[in-house]
Image (cartoon, rainbow, N blue to C red; front, side, top):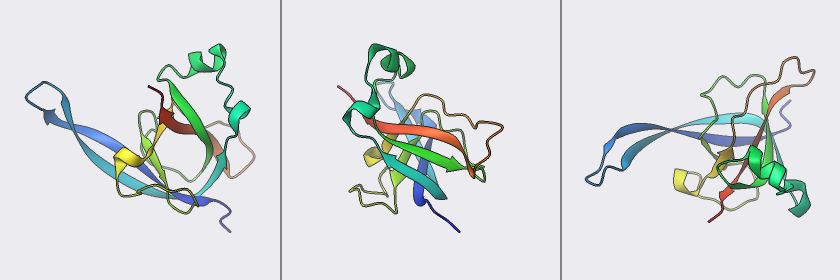
Length: 126
């Protein structure tokens, strides 16, 4: 029985560089079932100096996701995630509209539940 939502994990590969030396990316995606999605409310994000130091990419975290143990996709550092089966508005076919992954999520072991990896996602400030 699946309790979670379906999400789309976007990962990128560098194709080349443009005339200005900026990278040109190719995006691939993988849909993942049974991800628990929890929206965070104001103070839950804990945007203190200590919390920001854990998020050097300055992402303002909006959701905390719990990925199932069955996830065998790419590493989530620098990935983007679209919420597919959720009531939040986003273009799931556009990686530019997806949420940014904060930090370097890693599976926890041992973990007694079906979900063993917490992932914080949000938007970039500034």
